[in-house]
Length: 439
Image (cartoon, rainbow, N blue to C red; front, side, top):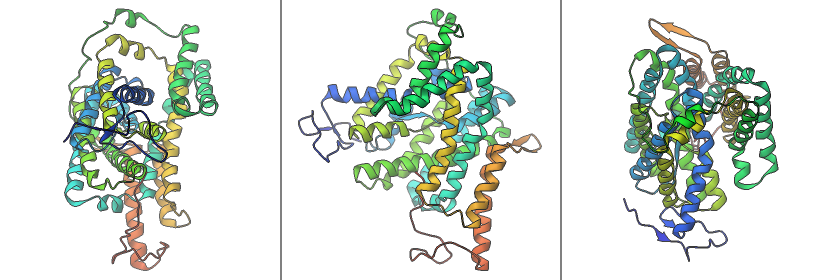
């Protein structure tokens, strides 16, 4: 892995139609500025996960920074990405905490990371085609959608605690989205949280006692995980989502830079798996590649990995300030309720976006039934207990999406009732070679 970067042009300008590639950089002052902009872009989403789950924000930021460094190293400094908190962990962490506390939830995060790392190793050795076969867009989109919609009651619970603050936060998110262009428009949730926080302060809903008591410099709080197979069913579906997010990230960066990055797919999955494993081992939330930072790259046309080293260093420095973490921890329930009303809904709609982008045909009863059954199972939070192991809505919905799709598709092909469009790119047995990668 080479850590040196060639200077792009004169280091100050990017010509029309040009991009700053991963192995290039602008001048260091500009690179540092862009790196800090990446921190701002990931800030709101990365901190919402520990705030919602009760994990220490500073610890999550620490492992986010460390995970980003590991990602850059494992991918050979060739794939720009920031690893922030994954929203796919919200529901399983909450369920595991209710069952056995935070340490048990961290055990689930760690196991998820190990499984993802194993998937990454397999992809690196044999390629990623099998992922597309097991997880076509109708399945991936359904899993993402049901995770977001499964969390809707949690958002409502927070809104009820402070309705005025929640509505102010929600309204701010809505207005910022359409009032501003560029980076501010992309940071609508973060800006909404800041507005809601100000409203909460004025209404006396914020307690600053912990902020005053916190030190300016110090290590984050670390927590060791515990393990129980009863939580495995809660976290297993997250692996599917993380795979989809990482594959989508690699494909997106490849499209924007005009490069074939598929050879790095396995490394990207392995890197995120190792980062998530490390986070679970010390008290942080599981990680994923961040779409927010793809937006920054698209806006700036700078894909330099140097900017991500700067972002990781900045995040690491912030994580070593307990006072900073204490401020984040004072965000009240009403603000969270307003922000998560949008956020959880967006996660649900991202699933639908995967369907739209991949032109999923819902006139095909296989696709329609797959999504219909899995969504109801996930949203209604169906539960099935087998001894001490309990499978809830997200796990059962994921199993339903994968199982129903392949069962129906297999029977339809066998009976000749399939409504799949004929494709010259299909191979014997019906395995399609068209691009089914979720984005």
